[in-house]
Amino acid sequence: KRIYLDFLHIPSKKVIEFDGKYWHEFQEEQDKYRDYALKTMGYKILRIPETYNKRLWDKYLDNAVKFISESNPS
Image (tube, rainbow, N blue to C red; front, side):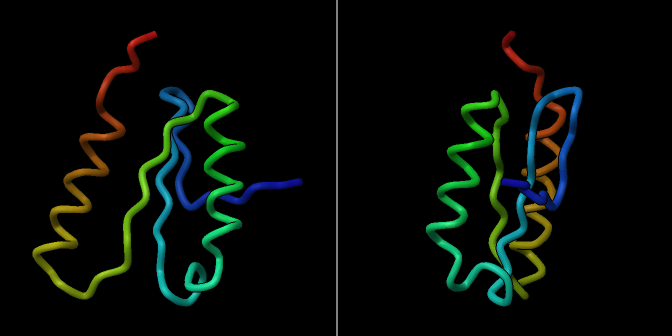
């Protein structure tokens, strides 16, 4: 089964998923399956919830940058 990702950083094997209400409101089980499948393939996942709060959005973007830039302990 194919898994479509919002953002994939291949060198670090990291995935960022943006969880908006439109696409993820009734997808909790599907998201759990995707997370499990990706983790078994060695990927780390960061999920970012939808928000219209500018302060939270800035925080989530900062977290995403930190997540990608962290070195892998391999």
